[in-house]
Length: 245
Image (cartoon, rainbow, N blue to C red; front, top):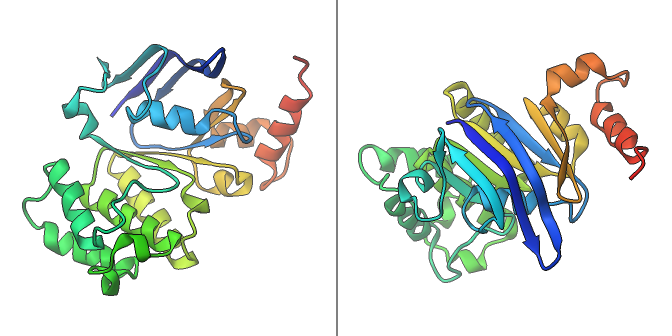
């Protein structure tokens, strides 16, 4: 699914949280959105997901203009915020079923798929537990199981590596994400962990004060940076800080 933004702007009062962001994201990539606190990372993801309405500019999915009432397009992606939207008294299984029905993905061998994911993320014993009684990491795992059971074209995730998941959950997420990308899906996630982004992204988007300061493939950055592996993005951030306003 081709994703494009053109002069995307989102303002809160007089200050833009996003300032004329123009991007093109091809299918089959993992894109890490990086930036300091308050840079606009979450706002970008929320606009892409239709949670927030842009002040101006345009979002296109497969060259079709995206508006919040385009349910057909919204069913092609799934957004997992840093604190997943869940009903506290709903059980894990009921929540997953609700998401599947919303996406009209509750037909076919869905039960086997959900069971496999619940076992892999080690939350099968919790399926009858109220989500509000789970830890943050367990709640995020339940949200990921719902996303992966739906199997949308685009995964949009806010800070998945700061979600409280244990190492096994993180490893399962990374493996499943890579498998999805090989099939042409697109993963867009935000993070502040530079070294992680260097090893788990095909392309990085660096945002500061609502503006995109870099949007490039990791392989290209490795070839042009003088920094050693593990410090490429750190070096880029330092050079951006040295640029005068």
